[in-house]
Image 1 (cartoon, rainbow, N blue to C red):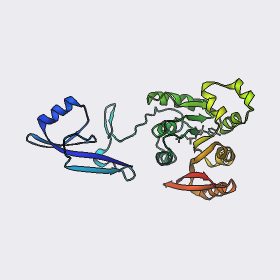
Image 2: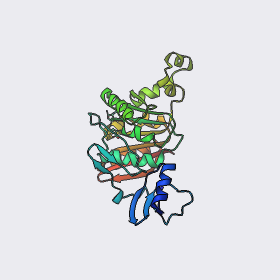
Image 3: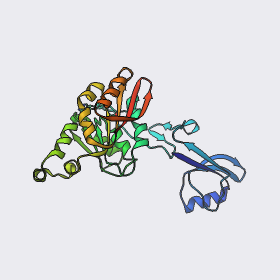
Image 4: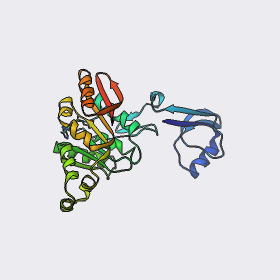
Length: 269
Ligand SMILES: C[S@@+](CC[C@H](N)C(=O)[O-])C[C@H]1O[C@@H](n2cnc3c(N)ncnc32)[C@H](O)[C@@H]1O
């Protein structure tokens, strides 16, 4: 994915007129008397940019566009996708490599109409991040009620009101879809509707630990259609997860490593 910045040299008065007509963000690069050199991510109609800078998300080094922190303000470049997380008890501040790996994989593998289940959502960081990439149904589950409470609060602080969070395990979700049709009618509640009637998610995220994967892997494989994206695999556990995938007839589509941690995108054979 590429982000473009347009550099213009514009008469200062003209620039002021433009700003009155259409508010847009810009950065002043240079002032040469009345001609200002500015950069903006907006195409200014009727003006020819003197330069188009292409920034590749993949190789992004914030460099001169490093976020600026001033008092309680954080100023971000316009292509940044912010996620606000309140310091709490739940795992998922974004500092851990396993979470960072998941964020990168979400960006590359979640697309516009994918329904998504975040297993072990913790603070909700990945559930919230996923909303940037899909407009479809998203649910975060965790067996820790405190995590769910914090995830709901974090989603609210990010201005997102259409994520579903629930204290549940993968098996809880699976069992709903197994129910007989006439029994389902007794359980319908808006927030559970998807699980009872669709029951399978395009993408399942799971940043867990090896001993949990050993227990839950079978359930996780039954819950996804396109991708199972996992992380939290420590360096000496790489071979174990690969052999578990083989046992369940799953194929590894992508592996991402950061320091001592591995993440995988898994598909069905
Ligand atoms: C390593 S944290 C991941 C948090 C967040 N998703 C992230 O990537 O930063 C794992 C979370 O999984 C939850 N968890 C562990 N076993 C689980 C299970 N069987 N079902 C649902 N949640 C589980 C834990 O309570 C914890 O909040």
